[in-house]
Image (cartoon, rainbow, N blue to C red; front, side, top):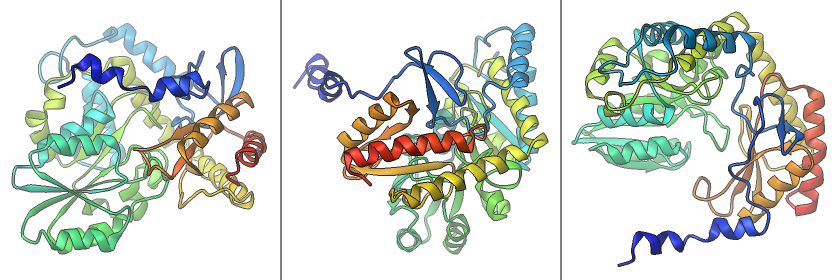
Amino acid sequence: MKSVAERVAEFTEARRVMAMGLYPYFREIEGEQGTIVTMNGKSVLMMGSNNYLGLTDHPEVKAAAQKAIDQYGTGCAGSRFLNGTLSIHTECEEVLADFMGTEASLVYSTGFMANQGVISALVGRDSYIIIDKADHASIIDAARLAYGKTIKYAHNDMEDLEKKLSALSGKLCIIVIDGVFSMEGDIAKLPEICDIAEKYNAEVIVDDAHAIGVIGENGTGTASHFGIGDKILGTIGTFSKALASIGGFIASSENIIHFLRHHSRALIFSASPPPAGVAAVIKAVEIIKREPERIERLMELTAYLRNALKQANFNIGQSETPIIPIYVGEEMNAFKACMMLQAEGVFVNPVISPAVPPDKSLLRLSLMSTLTEENLDFAMEKLIKVGKTLGFI
């Protein structure tokens, strides 16, 4: 049996890519993550941020965070369950419940922990978790922690979902899906999923990490987008994207929230989110409700870039949202393209296996409402240059 030291020493893939000068991870950004960022002293167009509404550097959001530090300090020194619940946490939960149109909400320290804490607590020993194969890693890990058995169905394939559920007739099943899929940028077929769930007495939870602030009425997510909020058990969201902070939450019924407060280990045994971050969320929600044009602008830019990419013959799959993948084939193509684009002044994210199949590596573009058409034209010029050089257009 190999020791830990021996096993970790065998991991050489990243060092090999580093030696080639193509390592695209942990790149340092020197300052705020706005439309233009500074890297190695150079200006780079940010085309890979989840700051969808451009609120992370909004003056009001920063001022709210600073005010919270003055009032509450920098941390909570305990879990929500014991000494770590501040009045600002309760206020944030009330704001989120009102925003999402639910009876209650519950705040976690990260979006990853929200999925882990909710799913592992709600799925019992005799239950089944049904997940889309393209679901986020936090859902997959949450399913591993839960006592129930996990069943996967083919991505957005309703025939396969029904086949899986019909084989579990009479069993307690909870379907957990991404509302907007984080790699592909497409939207879950939620109306069909809910119809199938109802047919087989299953329940549905939606992870709307990439949908909150992006789709639905006032940016309230996938169920709102389809007008079926009453057909799901709850919505899980994150603060680290459109809500300009870090943390996570679930919006659901008062009974579900009450149960989670007393059974969710990720909540009970983790330190509370710091007050500055929570204050930023409250202000971000206020701005989203006050300025719906931010979401409208985001979708205008998304349509503009999607059309340009299609006209240039890039393969962008089935994207319907500000997440736009460009499929480049093998993973080395993704690494090369990422670093070539950075040298040309454009920041994008490479996505390789296991996040996607080995032969479907991609560059993930993520748009912000603060970009301009001129920014996108510049990005297109560089994307076409790199795409032709590497042969994926």
